[in-house]
Image 1 (cartoon, rainbow, N blue to C red):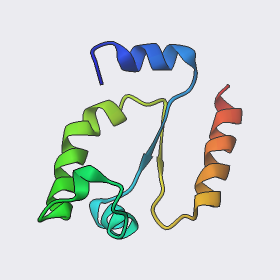
Image 2 (image 1 turned 180 degrees about the vertical axis):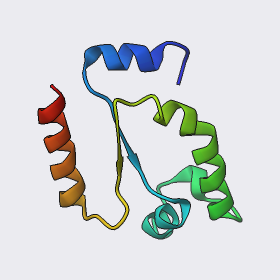
Image 3 (image 1 turned 90 degrees about the vertical axis):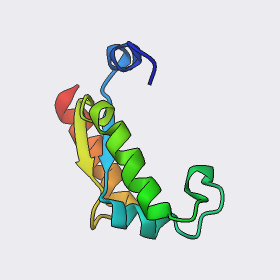
Image 4 (image 1 turned 45 degrees about the vertical axis):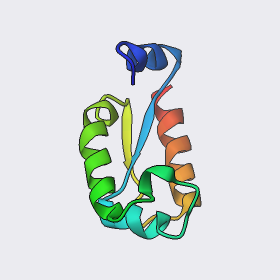
Length: 87
């Protein structure tokens, strides 16, 4: 993100980061051809590299929610619950 962007976003409301480990991200995206950053010889290495580059920004979110072992509905419910508790 450009310098100051996370602060600007946070000034507008709560910022949530959804987190998963590289293996989970790979499993969720391996068939998705509309992810140009992962159309490489070694998508797992690219996922790990992207997470490493982005981790500092993700850690600045108001809430970090793991999506490991959770359905989309479970994650959405958790986001809503966290939002209501923190707003």
